[in-house]
Image 1 (cartoon, rainbow, N blue to C red):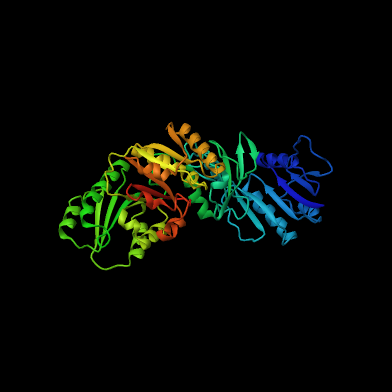
Image 2: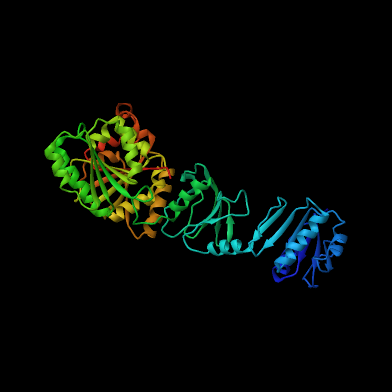
Length: 468
């Protein structure tokens, strides 16, 4: 049996003793010292021993300290009494661990004295009730934010997503609280609005996860970044297409209402450069690199420097293997602009595949379609396995209800790529995964519709990273 000494003379100490008496354990015996006797409800006399005396009295305290205590807890309302009580204990027990309620910002120089700052605890607890502020476990683990509690808002990107499609790298959802009940997570469990998620992971990663969960529609390209980047390599993009490319980028910029940076490398036409410079304004900036550069390194540096959330490139650049690899490694959405009108687009088309990557990027898809005023279309090829597809369709139907945006689901008996080739005024949206970085020749005989994205090269396409 472990003996614990509690020294109390105030209302906080009384509340503490009452809570301890309600905590079930058969391994501890509590010795309670109070300056004035207080009655407590349902106290087990075998586990609680009460004494009434002034703990600042060395003689009286010395008598009780003849027993072997593993710990002392002091909750008193007078700083001088606390300091003298600690002094008395130390004169008798040099190494005994002492926990002290600190209401006066006392300074501790004793390694075996733990000061619990009451002001910090109250302020932290009040902060937990503020909206849009993560609740971090402070008395569990190392208390640095590796355990976090997050309320899922109604318009969150996590709403109606299955646990199995949420990529959890260096973090985990370990519990779900719904209607004040604990629900254990599983791959098929679906997150619902107002669910309270308990997360465990690296503190820096959890901060990013928190922002992603709280992200609502109307923010794209957030949370990937805050600006748009039109990247033009004049050695790759046909000169006759550049003017139209810039005009389409300006149109997207006006729709999304985020700053646009036009970056030009390998400049080779003074007339085109002057045409592009004419667009320079407060929220459209022009950057021209006149020196031969390492395209990949330069591009990745620009993504970070300009806090880019959406990259716009010409079809010729995305077709380039090395450019495509660099775009993938940047982990930001890419809008590949084809050589056709953009302002007349009406539909955003998605081809369902055997994986559920579209579910991972669903909120971003709804956000883009909302801001660009696109209708959403899902194409389901019936000749392929249907289980995962049905779950994705269910997920999109749930989101369409939340966001009050209708979707159409087309059941196709022939390959949807052939169907879309007969269609006008649409943009295709795809998950941006590693398999899209392979050489096109290696995908020619594939049956994976995502690997065959280049079959729709003549149309605008948006590639969205599936990683959080």
